[in-house]
Image (tube, rainbow, N blue to C red; front, side, top):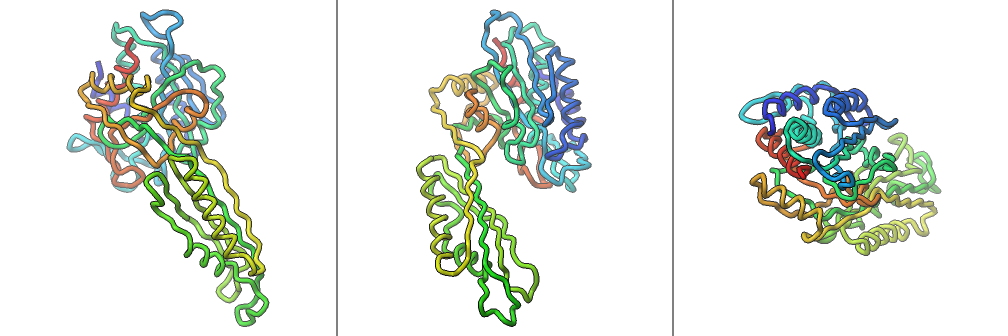
Length: 362
């Protein structure tokens, strides 16, 4: 049975351990201690991913394990989090994020497993991973060695909104890094110069961004250029992205952006580098997929009608699916993430723990 008081106490304890992306060691060590106390065989790798293996109880020796995942890192500002409990929810004091993305998932897994261990219920073997640097581009998941894992199905607890959502689809994500090199001169003698910033501005003005179609988006988030007010800029660096849940659309939109930049730079004397890096690949499940039905059944058993969603965001599930573990993402209750207004209803955190308990029960 889920212990609400312990759920809250665990969240408050972990939230006060600094864990910004890239500095997860202290939190990783603490959650590893908690997993060991539950009887799990636990290890921490060089990236501070925590892996744990817990034998099942009352099931056949060859019972298939369930994979469970959440991440330990938080976006900035994430140092000195002071969680406040009021009105049936947990929030920060307003100076930092709360870190419920994704401490809600971490705590739900810890409590769900604890409830099973303390009971006399049967449960399947569990393979648990708390990843690091998820917010920096799924770094921990990409770097985790899965050679000792045997699970073929799993659940990532890392989506916002009330418990009940099952994410059926996530996009492929292309990272764009564009460099335009022109020729500098003093702004009072511009003859012979090649203004890289003007070329970049012209190309950006011609490029469609935002929502491209129902499955695709594009964005340019960073433009770096210039040395001084009176120097014609000879180098511009542009950082952007394209996402789509459809592979053909992704390639078409990425190619269209490149063609615009190529055409704009042609004949100006500038040189352009257009680099495309794959951040992660898409996944998509039907409602009839076994792991989806397993999660839907567990949600119904805890009184949460399943909701089926598609997302334009990525998560560790993109990596696990690419590595051969069929994994869906579920919501764990947090709201207004990546802001200092982030909050987490306690009742939703309890439901998330109940979901873990139900998913693992044999």
